[in-house]
Amino acid sequence: MAKFTAPVTKGQRLSGTVADLTYEAMGVVKVGQDYPIFVANALTSEEIEFQVTKVNAHYGFGRLLKIVTESPDRVPADTRNYLQTGIAPLAHLAYSAQLKFKQEQVVNSLAKFHLDWQVQPTLAAPKETGYRNKAQVPVKMVAGVLQTGFYRQRSHDLIPMTDFLIQDPRIDQTIQSIRDILREYQVPAYDETTGKGTLRHIMVRRAQATGQQMVVLVSKQRHLPNEVAVVEQISQLPEITSIIVNFNPKKTNVILGVKERLVFGHLYLEDELLGHQFHISAQSFYQVNHDQTERLYQTAIDAAQLQPTDVVVDAYSGIGTIGISVADQVKQVREIEVVPEAVADAKNNAQLNGVTNMDFTVGKAEEIMPQWAAADVKMDVLFVDPPRKGLSPEFVAAVLAVKPQKIVYISCNPATLARDLSLLTAGGYQGNQVQPVDMFPQTTHVESVSVLERDE
Image 1 (tube, rainbow, N blue to C red):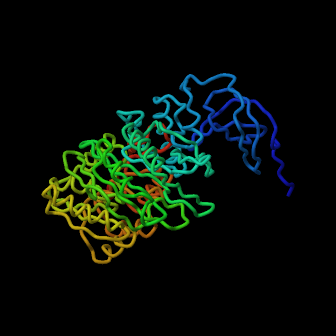
Image 2: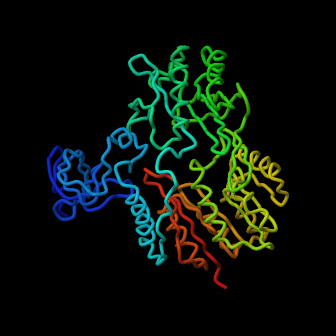
Image 3: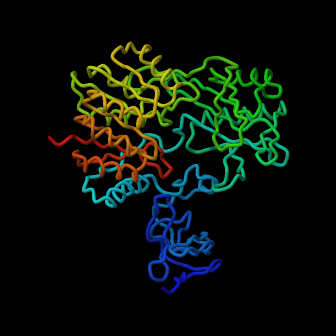
């Protein structure tokens, strides 16, 4: 067989028209016999000049040199930092076009599995920027000065930043103030190359309903240099109700370590969601877009059409947000969650809201569900909100064994959603509609709600 030769060479300068965007929002320019070259910061329909930077057998990559003809959907602003760091890879695209892009991601994923489901227009977020209630910002010594910012994509080169665009601006201000305090008390940033230094990340959470802010200082050492003075200064900042030192001594990309110490205030934040009170600890999962989370969950709850006699299972329950929100509409709620701290939060939150018809199981959903299937556990409605990898084969098999009447699938990844819907429909379930919800404006991520019912 003749060896394939790419129609371009590395370093070559070319021009072309952007035909489409990938799911990562890279522009696609076709060269020769449909050879795609992926170019960052290029939008559909734009005529561009670019330089080839990498060549593979079936595709290549290019660097944008010049936009000859701009897309009408291009945002006229300096978005380089947001694009280079990957914080906001769609910051250069008008919001209406972002919503359509996300709808198309779901459509394309379903088409690969020949699922003829209707995909509704993406539900827009009320805030296009400044919506994130949680920030995890790396710190690094740059020219001998501690800086906060974000890493350039596919590198550990820190780009110093104080405006992160998609984060609550009050969180941005808190991080900037903490940076200045750390500089004043000469707390050194951790250097992953040498292993020297102390501080790795600053994490800040803010509760929208109460305005409370939690600060987590992730340290290589158990104690920070000048810790008492640093904590005292940070505690004086506006809205700070909690300061935690998290101990992470490992050489790892995982941000938070297992052990932590409360050094000021409370171990949790207080927030409200769908009319219920929630306590959120540092390590627990909590959706980062408060207003759109309410819309996402309400969409899922409405789609479930719950009945007073229903037994509901929430298989990825976190701190109990969905379960507590539906508890007063059903007979019983059963929660499964792998993170013990989140389960502790969920139990506390159930008590906080006067909910008594819930039980809690610590473990992996893909391990607990087969056990319940073997024990013939009753369930009428199953809520699933899995991570990006979707449902495991073991979990799907257990669902098909237990046979809940209805499955409400909240997805954060169209690709695994389509795969799982295909498996569930092959196993006797049917559905016809997906509702995308934009939880993360300016990014390529899209959540969605789907409902499947068992064939009788």
